[in-house]
Image 1 (cartoon, rainbow, N blue to C red):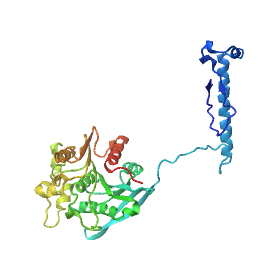
Image 2 (tube, rainbow, N blue to C red; image 1 turned 60 degrees about the vertical axis):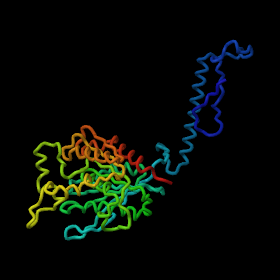
Image 3 (cartoon, rainbow, N blue to C red; image 1 turned 90 degrees about the vertical axis):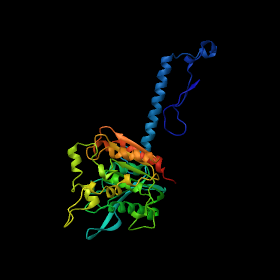
Image 4 (cartoon, rainbow, N blue to C red; image 1 turned 135 degrees about the vertical axis):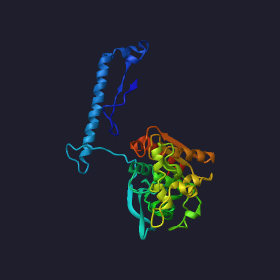
Length: 374
């Protein structure tokens, strides 16, 4: 005897759910004479009966569902009724947070960040995103696809602006460290785990993320607000970032390399400042020691946090060798480092917004920082 479960979604007893004797599945020698007398239906009839039973169950289920819908507030005939099972927390955007006030030329400037905060009580790791802009701009509204993906994974995601040219090094680094200290100082306000804060940046923002990672514990660059908090980071993701200001165009055509030896190129302005009065400006190579001090390659000690380095093989603005040399240097010091070279990707092109890239970064942060804790 086989029990046929009708596709009925009603609770309790359904009159259409019945037991069907499937004699076709039994050995004929096992069927009793009294049973043979009842075998008046052939297999086709049994199958037809089964179909009627199932149809009846579905009709009952639909009728029951319609009756339930009639009781829903706001229901009217023809309305589509769906049931949603919540599986994703809400994410709040907090904009225009002033995390620091700094001198910018002759004026006092307010540096701002925005926060994406999952709305729950979990203790969350935090990630600070630093935007690129060739040392000329730092629009922290960029890369929203990446930032939202990280927030959906449960992280507090900050996006911070920082000082750019004509300000000179170490101004951007001081700002980046202040942003990290701000989050630690306000950890309770946003349910941040202060022991798990990492940084992410692309292009010049990648340079800044690298600088934070390679200067962990260096108090020389802890200036400004919240100096009682640590600026150390527990992970770094750098995307087509600059690791050595001395050779950004390495491997490029000679004409491009000559541009990087100009007094007016942005890396030279970052290190030496703009020409003014008696100062005629200087090339990036005019003081290699000073340029290296403003590069992550000049600070690698073997005590760096984990790094994820990503670069495109077709990048014509920042040489892919910038990432390759950083990877080799960190690996030589036995630091934990991964390097992903994206074939055919250019500087900041559509490759970097694809799910494969975003998921790679999100998964790396999950492995490095761990998940939020209840």
